[in-house]
Image 1 (cartoon, rainbow, N blue to C red):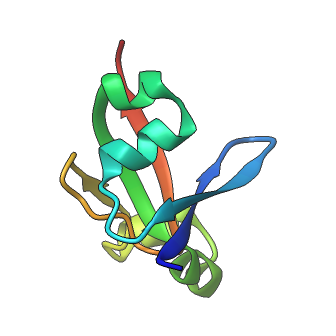
Image 2: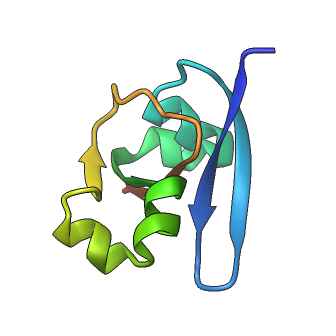
Length: 87
């Protein structure tokens, strides 16, 4: 079907979003809300398997597995994104 999922995480909610394979970070942000795409700055990302393996964002940062990605980043299946934006 050519689809994949990425996640957003907040204090009280984890949500999966379905996008087409090959979708860049800006278009993935737009799937959440058009304002996120319009004001996109960058995406903070890490992978689901990495967080399960290592247990915390702090450890992911220490191991260099927490990344800042730009507009052209191709979102991968299982990525967890925090979209930085300004409108």
